[in-house]
Image (cartoon, rainbow, N blue to C red; front, side, top):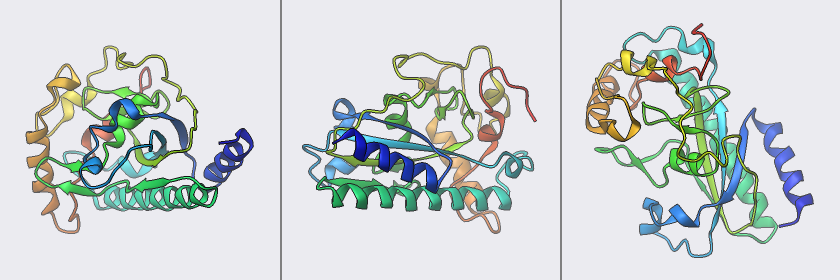
Length: 232
């Protein structure tokens, strides 16, 4: 792909949404994608990862579970990301490339909260940030208060994220705010010890709350504002 095309596409992306962009090769982790079980991803060696911030003011009412306002902004940011990802894919296709926009929030395994592609794994792989203790992507600019979307493609696009070159490192430091507030008790010292089954069970409870209807929580998202920043 020509640099001119990518710069033009990148400008189009940031005109659609206030996102942080990372792109690069994902062949190393492609075999882990659930999507690989239903379609041939051979040759689709690259991915574009977008991270869009959640409005902080909309998180302030969260205490021990999701609020209706959080559900609204969660849904709308996902929609914004999905529209942007679709636009990226269509533009790549027009340029002669293969491209697959992966929905920002679409579960294919409701028991274990699995999607076609783990946006978190792609984002960490491309340098968007690191895995926090809460097992979410944590960024240096907005903590875990972002939503993610991924576009898979055969276009050789390289755009390292701000955490590129530091894969495996954590920027959480001594912060354990997410550990203290998790209503499921699922978060521990290291993200590898995160108890997904407890998180999944708690989100099933929240899904039944009047007006929620989604497997969301938001408690650790509100707490995770990024390293070295004071809560607001």
